[in-house]
Length: 137
Image (cartoon, rainbow, N blue to C red; front, side, top):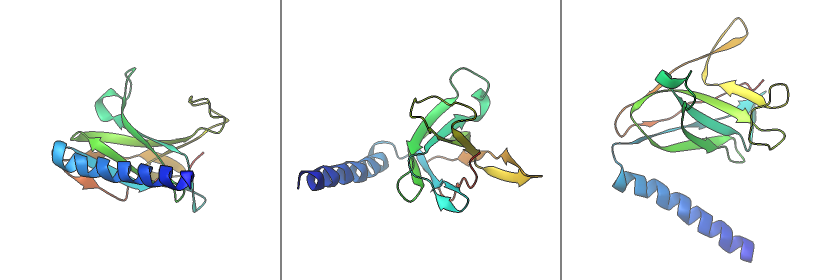
């Protein structure tokens, strides 16, 4: 019974956050999509929003989210700008990207078997959907 109350409370908080964004920050947008690997949804993936102009800086992270059981994510409170969207499956749960252990993917297009990251532009108040990441390596 206690688990049900916790789950209901979490759902109310999530729904409230989305409504709060509409009221408090209507100029900000959202980015949403699904993370899959081999056509299978991936749970618990960190989806990172990286600012276009600061990709080489020490602090390119603009915002983030985590995928649910269906591999779906939604990043709230996104400032109008252009971003790259990356996904990391932290296989060893150390909250660091470890090449060779953790899986990494990008929203983009495939050329010669390589994913080329595409920019995602968010305008004032825009909800950008369909930003799907389909391959984790």
